[in-house]
Amino acid sequence: MKGDKKKKIIKTIRIDVDKCNGCRACEVICSAFHAAPKYSSNNPARSRIRIIRDPLKDIYVPVYAGEYTVAECAGRDKYMIDGKEYDECAFCRASCPSRDEFKEPDSGLPLKCDMCESDPPLDEPLCVKWCHAEALIYEEREETVPEDQEEQEDMEIGLESLADKYGLQKIMDTVARMSEKD
Ligand code: SF4
Ligand code: SF4
Image (cartoon, rainbow, N blue to C red):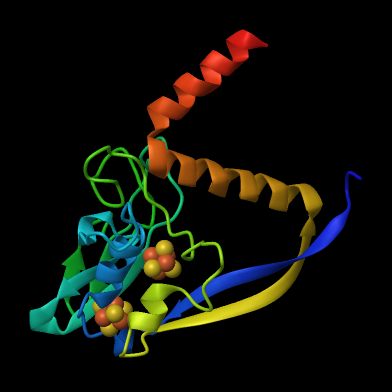
């Protein structure tokens, strides 16, 4: 019924920037997990986490891929860390038309962290498991949300994994063909 509520597990990864040593193991395992077939290759350019690195200043900042955005921002942020100014878009999580980060290198499709969704589910995300510096900490909490919100999110995750597997254009062509049959 519309307006019904249900419990939902919210998954988060807390980042302890001070512990990250820039080893990039998280990028390697994330790209391997999302390779097709799974673990057949690894390429950090396909990872849903990337490490902003400045080894001379001992600065390493893990950034997770977030939502895709169709338009670039009208305003930008600048960050100063230990006297170094970082690129306006350096710490942004979005896959965005104005830059190459968080895009599948071959197809250009947007990449987004899916918390290592798999069937059967993993006990914790692989980047967390592979981070021996304990810079990534997996946490879960329970929240009450509208029932249709979860259905919408499930549908988005399903569409994303289909797009990962077959490519966005192929899915759109299939949907167009199916609508013609109706
Ligand atoms: S695995 Fe951990 S320590 Fe290594 S780069 Fe990733 S977050 Fe940093
Ligand atoms: S949680 Fe999984 S999908 Fe997300 S960045 Fe880590 S390894 Fe990649």
